[in-house]
Image (cartoon, rainbow, N blue to C red):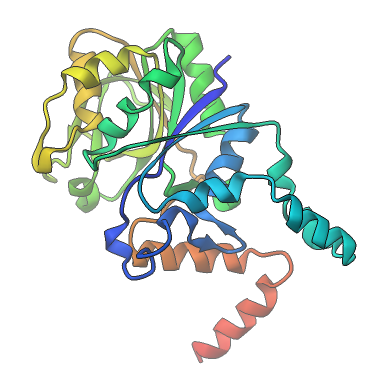
Length: 292
């Protein structure tokens, strides 16, 4: 059973300045919780019990967030704020947290490679720390992916979402082998193809499962634009060598919320806030008034 996940959170978040100047974009709130808490809760609900964060400068608030804050707990108890105490339930999950730094910004592939010493020879999940899958992270995509990984004896499982044809230029796009269903064999990945050259409309969607052979491929991967080591390039190396790669599609109700720019962040916040069980109805009424 795969119970280890690597969560890269070292990026600078430059597309969301100035909001990210003094705090990680992964700690920006979406509704009631920071982005990265949704990611971890999704992983925990899928059976993950060890989370390795690949951090960087200015990311200490992530470590603080997942620590048990004993003085705060004591204060809430002594002042009779039991309802607020329940909001800290995530601190008491049966999970071990580990942290190591990506000392230089050299791409997602390099961030994954930074976890090699701690992961060793076991298979693991990679979950991008700035992407929420499903409203309130109510998705079992990771457990579905790990089940496929073990059943198919794969070395690579990648999550995909279907995007509009004009949007393929922004993503790594699947080249399927054979019939495409909910689960399909992966022949290749094409990074940001033109609309005309795209082999499908299936875009990589922030979740992966790997055997440790990915580390060998990453070590061989040559830096590309900006000196970055791309995870997609390492996956392609393995596929070309005959390692088995599987794609798993998100279900129609499993929207990916990518907190990578203000447009997508605003949309995610509004959707999560409108779904809030306590304040969503009143907020919906308020928005209707604003829209006239």
